[in-house]
Length: 462
Image (cartoon, rainbow, N blue to C red; front, side, top):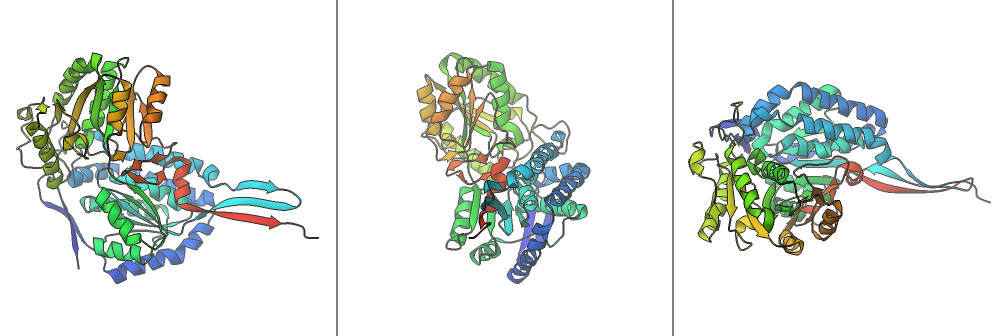
């Protein structure tokens, strides 16, 4: 048996541990989901919607416990109240729009023919969820998948072992059958074996590029549908007509919130020359306002990174950049909790950076941002596109037409104007290049967990 452990970044102790299912037990769990999926899909849509909404209500009712558990598991400060606000917003939108998203597309309904396309559930959906926003990312797929009539298996990250259990508790208490939604603890070999055996009809994975590649290899030849949200290196571009104060406050929050561990967090910023000096000065002041410490302290605004190895990546990238000529503008001594070797990492702003440095090209996923001066839109576009990733880009200007012109040339999944680090439930959440493939949220979130079925019914034959 394999033991899966969550090591708390707060104090380094084992916070939770569970035994992973054996391959045979995991196969049995998949078989039960498949056996009961058709009956679930046969229930009226409004009934499935009501049960899912009830589950969200139960999650909200246990939020105080969830917030404290999140602090222990992955280090997010309790002062922010967890993720239930975003969960509610997204779940409410998806359940309200399910009838429209799942409605048949009628091409012809005449005395001679009925021609239409319906959306059929994929069958059994596997959700492999990450630790950084463990409720939001999991429920992005769980909600539309269940509403559309699929059975769902959830495998959560080892860093957030208890999250899957809480989600299962809420859904089962609300009346979603245990044989329709199952939370499981699996090791990597068992997961790969189930995928390779075509145990699932659709797989959604949010995580690293390496993890996405491993899933693609496991699924090779099975023709299983995959939704992959992988790495990111999201840029911000501040144009000379931007609202400076708003740009600084929002982009620095996007770069440093959750210790920089956000899928669409800001990792690099390009600022038009006329605003560059003022932007950098104000950005440093924003960073200095943060309080790094124990996430269970209500005064803490920046908790530890979720795992020591993540902190080591951040420190290595910063050290390499400084060694290549970058300047660090935030004195780590202002943040005594950062001892230079543990998971508590002080926020940092780097200038005199360029794209020869890993910190400007590779995913950092920590409380660090590099800032560069640019002389034109063309230069900013070239630098924003000089990346293997493309999830979001944040453009700051008073001119919507200019934002659209620039946005059309940026290789990304979402273009923001005067905001960042947000998932709009009404739009498709997607990426390009090594950020992955597929789409969640909005109508597209239902398209990925269903398949089209065409009907050509000739009503009269003479």
